[in-house]
Length: 459
Image 1 (cartoon, one colour):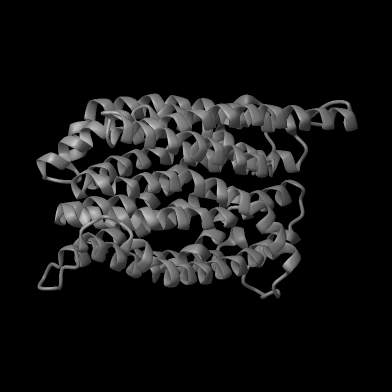
Image 2 (tube, helix red, strand yellow; image 1 turned 60 degrees about the horizontal axis):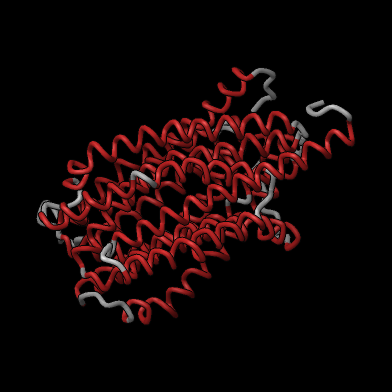
């Protein structure tokens, strides 16, 4: 990345970083998207089973991966401060942290998976598919976490097109694996929803191998000497990663887990409602990749400018990112409203599931604006390494406001399962308001400090 001096220059650099991230995120999420959609085409019970399994996996994965996202602002600020030596060291400490987190996931799964699934009021067949989908998926945990660290390094350098290239290669392979393991063509066994877990694990290993190959041989990565030596674990550096990363991970966990909690609480409404809810949520989450990508891009550019003490430029990037996400939100809302029936048919041919999915998608229209504000704001705050207060705000917005309100509306009114979606909308809106206020406060504080020290910001 380079310092920019005009609004046009900042927009150009921002888009050069954002577009590849967006394509990468859409491609990465497409693996879950195709898992869900193709499982639903096999049978709606498989769709329900994958829905339960995904609801357990996604918050665990995103929360722990969020810890590893600490690598991005650490490296961005190091590059902005021209501290190249710290980059390679930080990447390796991130790899060690990813290994530890992988072991943690296996331990949690071994202890808690069976008791948790037994506590759910779902059919035995749905429970069986959920368990074995997760067991198959667990084979890809280790490569996925290591890839997350390496991708954070690549993106922090501003080389987001490399991540895009890797993911675009992997996506058609994942679709092919899904077809083979879900439907069992050419006389092969058909695993249904369980096959989606097998396919995704194989794809994660492929992504990791390709990423290591590119970093070892790419000209742009050689100055950082990532795999030329293996420094021992540094508890000081791992502690820094955890101090920054745990609040990020918890923020992401509480955001994603509320959607999973709603899916699990819907077990009272039966497999059909769970399947329809998961289908609508899956597509809404696909659209969420837009503001999430803006968030990742803002962490990179804001972190770079903050590291160089160019606070006005960091502030300009934040505004640019939020406006971009809001414009996309209006387009996404229109797509959902107009195409809800066609979208529903992508997931199932069961008429009841299709009808319910279409209704859920109407509520998803209102997710878009709140997501378009709160996700980019969180990304900007991470660029400042401001993560602790963000975590608390996220916890209150989603779990103190959103989920309890959804439960009351669902159980005490005629809204039924749709009450949970209204609660989710309320939580997202509260998060957007509180996080925006926090960003404004941080920006003013940092600008005041620069003015005190130098008299004029950005110099």
